[in-house]
Amino acid sequence: MNTQQELLDANDQWAEELDHPLPEPVTAAKDFSLPPGLGDLKIRLGVERWPHSPEKHFRARLDDTLLEVMRHGAKEVGETLFPPHSDSPLDLLRSKRHGSHDWSAPITELETPLWVHLVQGGTRHFAIEYQLVIGINTKWGVAEDAHMTPRQLLASFGFEPNDYSLYQGNSTEPLPPDTPLHLKRGEHFEAQKDGRYGLTAPRGLQTIEDDVASVCAADISARLIGQNGQRFVEVVGIEIPSPPWSGPRATIAVAVPASYPQGGLDGFYLEKTVNQGGSIPYEQPAITLDGRTFALISWHYATGRDWNPSRDDLASHIAHCRGYFLKRGVR
Image (cartoon, rainbow, N blue to C red; front, side, top):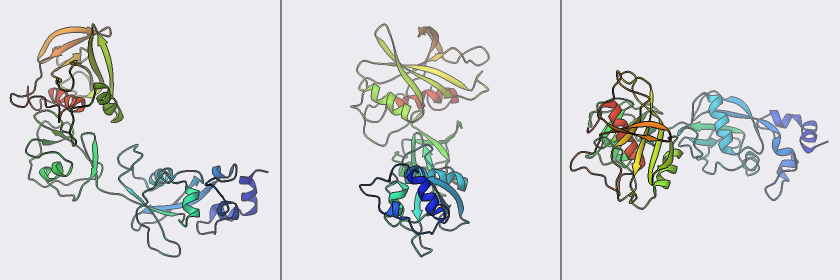
């Protein structure tokens, strides 16, 4: 009989009762390893919304990490963790102290297995502290107040408010910089500087491969392709307004200079799978890439606001290109 079945047979109350003392096979585990088969044992846990709400119950494996426990708990509570699909959520996990209604400090080591948490004195009662998590471009952070102004929100995310405007979703109009917002958890904004995103850290030494990997990590579908010695970044599935465009998504290609990032990105090519009433605004001569037809789009940075390799990168240029479809920023 395996250890899991033996444990269930010997003490089936333990798996069900949240406050039952730990059984000897768990407390006696050495070298941070449970006996074979025991890690797959599912036990009952409690979760609630911090600081107080009705406790809900679910099951998790002893070998599950606290991050997995937190994700299971969030599903039971019925509210998504932010950022979505992140291994480092900005929401917080707490555990109730033994014999008390008080909660622990936020648990920082979410990679800890559940059984280790229990052996080290943690309880099976958890709470999730949902924070006012907001997204700007590909960055997520916790807003200090629900009524921050766009100027304050930009500054808190590392954007210079005198250079950048804050937009909601697909809006073509920037939010008034000093009008208080009514922020909602999970809300997402776009920060653009005359049609381009800003960055929170100095740039200028990265390769185009670095930038492609970075935007892909942010759930943007991008890849490098080449033709006749010229490299392009193809970006698939850019969300565009439909109408006036004939479809909801577009594919673009951006020519990459050999001296990138000192040599900046400029303009883009649009795959001719979408149009406006049969035509494409600012269309220039077309090229063939990977067997498909792309039209050159005349869409450039404003005079005096040229590409800056210490601030701009592929992500900022994709946002600049998206401004074309929204009629936002410079032409």
